Amino acid sequence: MADSMNDNPQDPAQQSLADMLVNLPAVRAGKRATALSRIHRRLIEPIETEQDNGDPRLAFQHTVFCQTSWPYRDPGDDVRLWQRTQGDVLLEVQAGRVAHPATRNTVEVGLPWGTKPRLILAHLNAEALRRGSPIIEVESSLTAFVKRIRGFDGGREIRAFKDQLSRLSAATVRLACFGGRRMFQINSQVVTAFELWSELDDRQRVLWPSTIQLSLDYFESLQQHAVPLHEVDLAALAHSAMALDLYAWLAQRLHRVSPNRPAFVPWAALKQQFGPDYGRMVDFKRFFSAALRQVLARYQAARIEADSHGLRLFNSPPPVKKQLVLLPPPSRT
Figure (tube, rainbow, N blue to C red):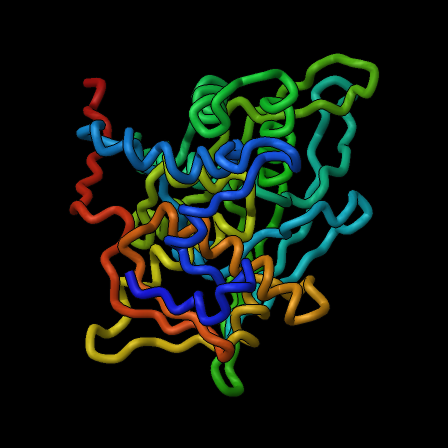
C-alpha cells in the first residue's frame, strides 16, 4: 500500500498507517501505553477473524450515497432543510412529517444525521437485494444488525437507531446534477411507505417503522448501482460518520481509477465533499487524516498517497473482490 503520509514524523496527523498501528495511544492518560482503545480494537481485531469466515456478511451502499452524504452532526429539530454540494452534484434533504398512531395527528421528525442513517441504509440495501424485494421487515433484522455492528443490543442503542430510521423514512431527497447550463434533478424518497408503531411513554413521541418499502425508482437503481461493502468494516468504523463516508467513497472510486494514470484530488475538493462544516483547512486536514488512517486499517488494498496538495489515488481492488450474484428468493408457489 502506497502511503506518503509520513512526510513529517513528528506530526501525528501525518504518521504513516504502519506507524499508527505500531504506536497506538493509551486509552486514558496514566494507563499503560500498550492498552488499546475500543475503537482501535475494532479497527484491528476483526481483520484476523473475518478471514476464517468463508462467506462474510455484506452490506451495500448506493453509488450516489458513496459520493454525497447525510449531515454529520445533529442540525437541530428546527432545521428542516439541509444541502451539500460536491462538484457538479447537489444533494438536498428535507425533513418530513409522520402521522402518529397514538395521537392520530402528524408530527415533525428531524433530519437524519450521524453514523446511524449511513449504517441503516447499508443494512436496508442489503436486505432488499438479498430478498429481491423493496419491502423489508425491519423490526427483528434491525435489532440483529445493531447487535452485530455495535456488539450489543441495549434498549437505548436500539431506540437511537429506530429514531434515525424514522427520520430516514420520512425524509425527501432531491438530487441535482449540473452540466454547463443544463441541470437534471431527481425528487424522491428512499422510503415511500412504512408501517409505524409508537411506544407509549411520557413523551408520546417514540416512533419507529416496523415494515418499510423502498421506492421502486430507488430499488431498481440500487440493483444496478449497489456498491458492496464488508459489514465488519462498517462495524469497525461505526464511530465516525466521516470514516464511513470515506470508506464508501474509496470503495466505489479506487477500482475505477485508470491503471496507467492516478487520479489527483486537491485538499479543497476533499474539504468541500467531506468537511464543509470545518472553518479552517488545518482543522479539516487533522480530522480527515485521522479518519483516513482508520479506513486504511480496514481497506488495506487501497493505494493512496497524500501530501500537502491533496490525495493521489491509484487503481486498487475494491474491498469486496469476489463477483456477486444476487438472486431473488424462491417463489412460494
